[in-house]
Length: 382
Image (cartoon, rainbow, N blue to C red):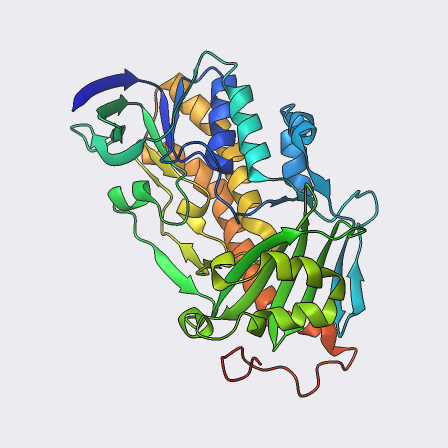
């Protein structure tokens, strides 16, 4: 195996939204940055793709938003709560707001950010590259990443390592940062179908057997469907006919029936996501920082995860820039990031839990749920 070495200021492991944005901001600030990702650069399906007004403003501030918009995005006009095919509650933009969220395909978001980052000489990007180890100096400070790319073994020497590698993070594990996994009692199934003619840019929510069923209008004329199911039930659920989860859609949205029949024909057309959140007692060590889902995994509720991760990158970039310029990489210096973000992130996690617990109250005032709130099990779905 060939051995190669590169020297940079910062090495970011993971090229999701938070890692990509951080790499762009650092390169723009004159910080020599290497971002590595295990995949080929094509973003996976069914990741968080709804950004908030705050994230929109961050992208606007750095002249990224309109470039992303050129590739395609979709502003959500409202959130609707349905029961028996009827809208029972509507959330619309507040005063001075233009939308209730924006759908941005991750392929559009990440590719645009990395393309803009590549215009800076300080930016470096390696795909199909797997981080395999961390390098520490004699005093224990992290100072590099070991990686494999094809038949090449890379040593990436750096002053600061950033773990932005998602909900199953290599960097956090290699740095021996503890993690508390919090289960929420449910998992999620995802699917995507073409939207019928006239389908409006909305988020539509309903209860099916006491669990949330959500429909997200997507850029390019699609509808993403998400079913909350009781935690651990998926293996048993797959033994039943697919109509088990499709019937509530037929009942509430008959206009979708034709496209459902064409595109959701077996369980192979359904993607499973195990739902959990996480907390770690620290996000920093000497020469190392973890951000986004690697530091604080979020659940799908409220599409908070992508926005929290990108805000992490926005807050961290000037702190790392200053650290590089002053050559101070200690845990005490890097902890400024954690001090600025931890309370806000943990509050968001509490909000998610409260929203999950109170979801059905959006319908209760209409007395439409009497005797119908139950637990999703193979016995109760028919």
